[in-house]
Image 1 (cartoon, rainbow, N blue to C red):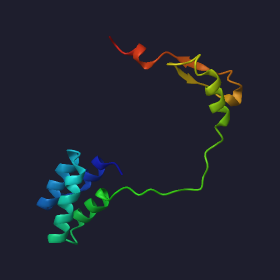
Image 2 (image 1 turned 90 degrees about the horizontal axis):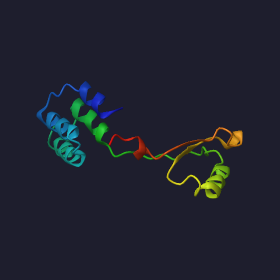
Image 3 (image 1 turned 90 degrees about the vertical axis):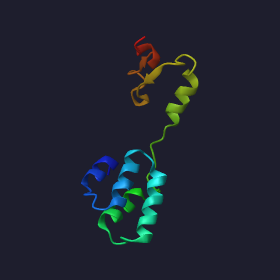
Image 4 (image 1 turned 120 degrees about the horizontal axis):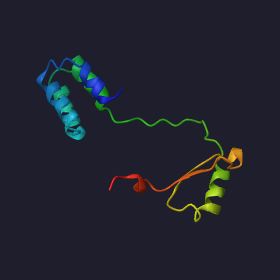
Length: 114
């Protein structure tokens, strides 16, 4: 859940929760985690707002899956063979269509206003 939507749902009944939310909105996550840890250890272990913030501020979890990506060896071979011809350009296409749909564009800087 995005932080903004999550923080808008909280009623901010405690001073600690309000301070923690302010730190989150300022992107000071480490400080918010430290304040939350202190608040949970001092009091309000069962405070629903602080428990909600604890879930929000928990370190991210990485999970591995056994799903494999598609074989990209043809794309890598094409890039290796053609990199000099298209250096500095955006290139899009489909090797499944024999690169008949190849599309190239100049670098992004070309499109920026001067």
